[in-house]
Amino acid sequence: MFDLSGKAALVTGGSRGLGRAISMAFAQQGADVAVNYRGNASAADEVVAAIRELGHEAISIQGDTAGGREACEAIVKAAIDQFGKVDILVNNAGITRDNLLMRMDEAEWDDVIATNLSGPFWMCRAIARPMLKAKSGRIINMSSVAGRMGNAGQVNYASAKAGLIGLTKTVARELASRGITANAIAPGLIQTELTADLPDAARQFVLDSTPLGYIGSVEDVAAAAVYLASDEARYVTGQVLGIDGGMMMGG
Image 1 (cartoon, one colour):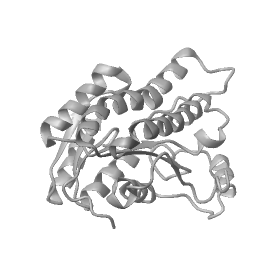
Image 2 (image 1 turned 30 degrees about the vertical axis):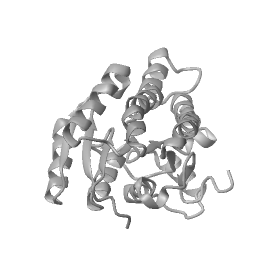
Image 3 (image 1 turned 135 degrees about the vertical axis):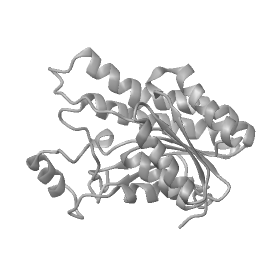
């Protein structure tokens, strides 16, 4: 795998699911990790303990990235205060509030946009200045196959994840001259707590749409994040890497 020794990473929503897998994968490749969480302190503490068992430094940082500029700046500051820098930012925190277009209420729309799109914007803005000073950095935004093809019942989620792709490409263009890369990962159906209760019919539909014919694991996504965070990906920016079993092939 790719060597992240000496790097400091900040992963939002890092206590469970994809965030936990990414945090652990970074640590396994040598990075120190700041694990951001919104409400589940015990889960975040468990990840921190597991990282420390690997011989690397880790802290948990409570904070809701949907809280706007000040909340996101506080999260970044806590990580920099601990490690002296943040080399890698992963905007992973996300929620779902699924409903059909004609039934979706204002709160369902606003909550998802605030967490899944506005949060990453404010996190990118907060990390940009220290990365610009360092003349290096890796920003990884967790999009979704839903943001590339749409998904019935997820107009809020798909809109946010599509917007995140535009955010990624724009940040990549604005920060490239200082050696900072920004890329997005767009997972397909991945086995997590969020997908565990997916109805059988919906699960089968996704499998039928996936050329490889099986559900991906959080480790599949984490491996992609490790690559994009590594020095080997220094010439990769503004890209959307689909970890989807071929679902978006050619799209």
